[in-house]
Amino acid sequence: MTENTTTPFHPLLTRHADAETCVDPSSTMRLLGEAGDADGGFTSYRSTFAEGAVGAPAHFHTRATELFFVLDGALRVLVGEEVTVLRKGDFLAVPPHTAHAFAAAPGHAADVLFVFDRAMDRFAYLRLLGRVMRGEADPKEIAESAERFDNHYVESAAWRAALDAS
Image 1: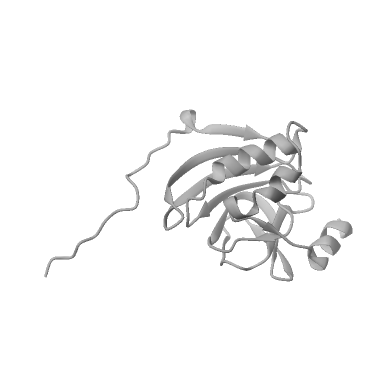
Image 2 (image 1 turned 120 degrees about the vertical axis):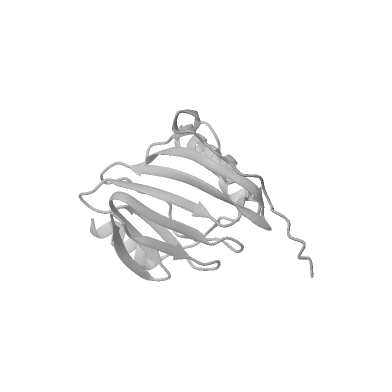
């Protein structure tokens, strides 16, 4: 019996010096790789958050699992309605339809590797987000892009309380 397998993308190597860098008021992102499509592939980037920087507000994805690996520092995260702190070496996988948010933990910077198990033109979303945060694009473009980028914002009393407490 011969098994017919196909690869959804070709091997991808991104050298550190060649990775695109996006800067917004909350973080510096190195766009590491994006390959495949929404049915198979991945998106990966590295974000460095300054002490006190707020990352993403509460949101969820309908198709993608988002993976977090803390390379250094500490990252405060919301998962569902629970807020916790991830520290250097900690790993978190957030499945689809699970509300989550993240920010540098109080008193800490954070260096985090993000991976999505789908390629959804996430780099275009990150570029758009940076333009909005710098005042170069209208914030309504983020709301209008929810389906395209599988990024759906929600209200979270637990996340709001965590941010207000710090």
